[in-house]
Length: 162
Image 1: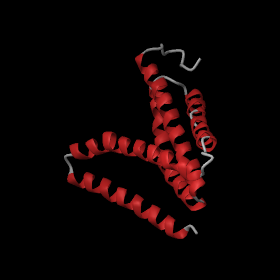
Image 2 (image 1 turned 30 degrees about the vertical axis):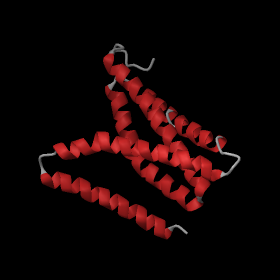
Image 3 (image 1 turned 60 degrees about the vertical axis):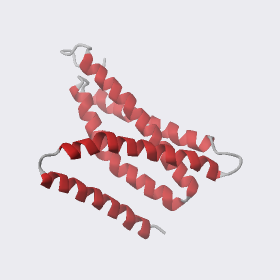
Image 4 (image 1 turned 60 degrees about the horizontal axis):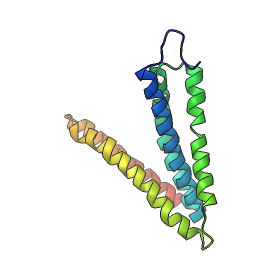
């Protein structure tokens, strides 16, 4: 079983399964973005991959913690978390398989806006409200500075790659 013997299946574990589903969908969109970016150019593909990897490291650690809180043991949580990566492979495969006979441009024309829209939605729904509710201006400034640092890293990588 996925649960420790002391835990019973309940709302906490259901939240763990919902998190796994959400993470799989998230990874699917990441796979779409990476594959479509590589279809455009090697440079865009590498930049997209770096951005997603930098985003995914803390995200996956957080999802692992959610699974532990939901009652999964460490080994099961790790295996399930790793299995959500298949969503990324499926997304990449889907982007490649849906290439239009008219060219890569037609595939990229819907994939990149779709995935970008998803990322913007998450930022506006999850991150922005937390920033606006923050009472400490120093913490808000830190968040904005880190956001600008992320943009600067991507600009520097864009200049350095090819």
